[in-house]
Length: 419
Image (cartoon, rainbow, N blue to C red; front, top):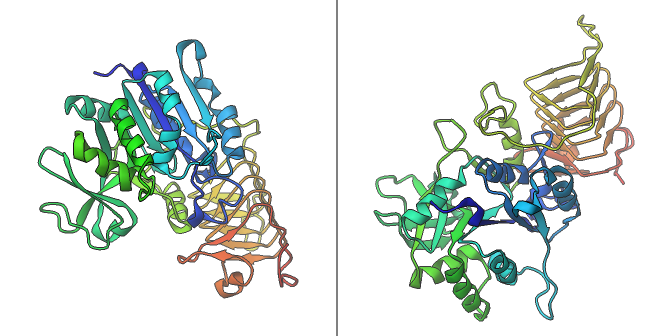
């Protein structure tokens, strides 16, 4: 078995996340809040800690301030420099050319010096923007058992979703024989005409073999500098490259892995959490998802006037974080981040409210995502009339209304525009 202290982790966390706008206007995709008290990257970082992997570089780039602050304030508990354990951001290293990471392969190439100074036996490269639970030790054991130079984490997905992912074809030993990036007509799995094997965006490498591939790729003007598009094929020509089938640590019958790359997929993943028996279990003590410690009082529910038309501070089928006050407002199937206040007679349903959102009296919010520091005026309706909402806000193809961070909303009677 590979000694875990000889495994170096690099988490790719610099993407713009353009399909998640406007949530990513002020933050990178891995820093987008999730499940009330988490950030998306906390799922990957928790997997690392639960897998006993504690040498972690987080490669940052786009809008990295929020993410760097989160790493510093929320993940310093695992840093023990004397033992070589850390979680640290790693921004692009400025050089004469190509100051910014031009792709995932370029990000690794630019940090070859960092990798070699740590002298790992195995480099584990992870995506910082997916929702799943995985014991990476199983993948590392597979890498060693197969005497591999590169292993690609792979998950089964419906064939109709193949055009959004890198699709892998393997032989009987799980050796990769073909890799296609977002194919229109993919080859299905043997005996599974409705399914394909997709890359999860996670990889293990032997550093020496990786260096050769990255240096050759950097000299190729036709390369897109992407691990999936370029490095898998390049290493497959001269190295042993395998696929590792995803093993869920979520204690469910189906493998739960979600790429929350769009507003609709992000909203759906959050709504999964408020179901009676959610597929993604936040309450598993054997595989905890670590959250930042929030200095806040417990959530408070006030006014119990249950008669028709009365004020009732209540939440059903919902996640309500610390510091929230439901002051006579009703919440149903929603996720509330810290310090949300919902005032009397307001109704919130199928929605996600970020930190410090205030919902005014008599307001009605349905199937919406409201970013931080937004005050919804008294009586305002969001998600009730989508045609009206489209005049002022972003509305996703699935009908989710998104209010950006810090937006100044005008009362319904005045909202010809918002500042």
